[in-house]
Image 1 (cartoon, rainbow, N blue to C red):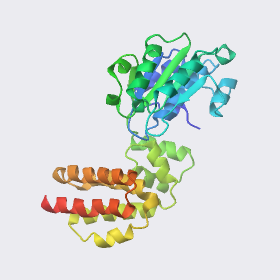
Image 2 (tube, rainbow, N blue to C red):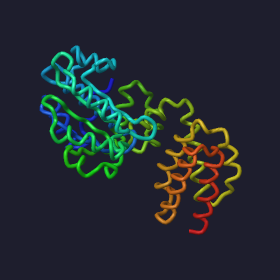
Image 3 (tube, rainbow, N blue to C red):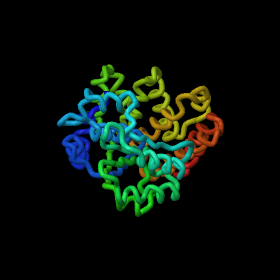
Image 4 (spheres, helix red, strand yellow):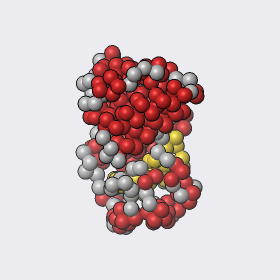
Length: 300
């Protein structure tokens, strides 16, 4: 079960934030910014739980409000997340309508807006007044990957906290606490890039060792000007592991490519990810890396 202790030590500002919520002195609105998979939403939910917790030091995971948060049944926690590609104005209006009602059990109320950077401008403007003049006992916790996608007026009314990538020793500690085997945890960390979410995804993939070997082979082929055809064939059935393979390749390239090679390499991996999201075949996406990137490295 996630807890504040998982996030202590990531940065002094995060430590201060946790202390404020633990002692029931939170800001009324805050924005957590960080890369994909570093635990933004998990932390945001823990902060909301701490606001609603009845214990002296929150969250306790034992009181009624905590237990209802853990089971998804606490109506004083309003969770807004993207529907499709964005959060539209109707979703924000619905949330504001709920806030206009009496709280349950005369409790404080919390609003978690996940991926707030995907709110449309209209949705952001609809939210603005509530951030400017929050009702007593109402707390907003927003998460985002792209701070620049939020309007300056939103940014000026929410305390900003950056959730950094996790150091490898903290990733290892967290994975081992979840009963992972040491060798499996170490393998997962290598491809996680400081992301606890990616580390857990890798750890839960039964084929992690083979994927590491395959990504190592891909990097070697790319950087040695070898023949990519055989590797393309080996990867043809790896569509289900596409995102993990991309992540592993992205993590390993900086350690072996020079600066001139690296920029082009990472651009091609990003392009392959975009192709996958556009329903282009996996084979075409991986060939984008193996052939186009190989050409760039050869020219470099």
